[in-house]
Length: 330
Image 1 (cartoon, helix red, strand yellow):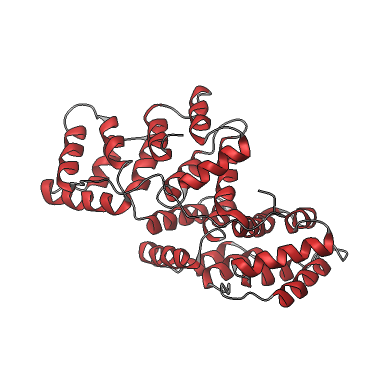
Image 2 (image 1 turned 30 degrees about the horizontal axis):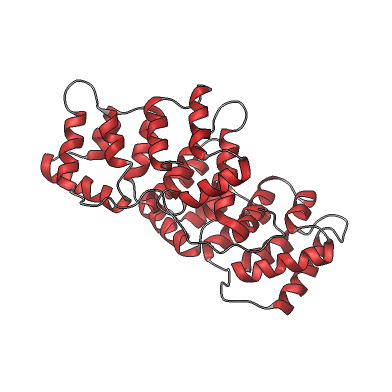
């Protein structure tokens, strides 16, 4: 959506909801039968695990252990492979643990995948970030904040640390202050030679959603440009991406994720990690909203986009079918 439009109010709509008449023991037996002996019945795995809520999957894991004395995740890992395995194992983890693992992977490889840090930390409400940080410390024995400080620097590091510390005031709503802050941002960017990036980080890192929206409106009155346009002309790199993620999620979080999904599928090759991460982590939150925005922005359904990736040889077979099951009918 255009950043000059109204801030959109919407109810979050998931695509994956708890199954009715759920029976964890029956599901555990069906999964064991699908993996036992020669060959694996992947469709049974998709039909069960892609159509249960995360809490139900945790209950299936417990029932599986109780019934067979076996670790369901270990069995799935030994039977599945590639991106299909990544989708299914992602679904089996509690969401906060899944996001913590994605952050660890982003920081511990060669270089740091800044876009993953931005997508996870700059687009989520603080209560979710607290849970992810706790899961991270439990999994890796180090604090997420310390690891981010070790892997990033400058204003970008400050932006991520502020997101982790929950410095946004979600109750503030002060039109006079918003006007003053919009002027400070104009003076820090368009209104001067060079850009004071720290001013953008401090103001946007502290502003809650409603107050940030006021700042954006005031900025457009002063500049004639949206704050997004101004930042794109004044900044670059990971800091720009982090600040843009904050601006976009203030206006319309599902549209931000729809844009990320399109970027993952655009051009040569598919960014499977991003495609899987967004679909797995949002399917029980707001994937239906993301689908709506995707179609509005790109003139095609998310379902058809993922299917066309298969035709281009980018996603295939069980992997594609698992994604389609999570996305749900168009």
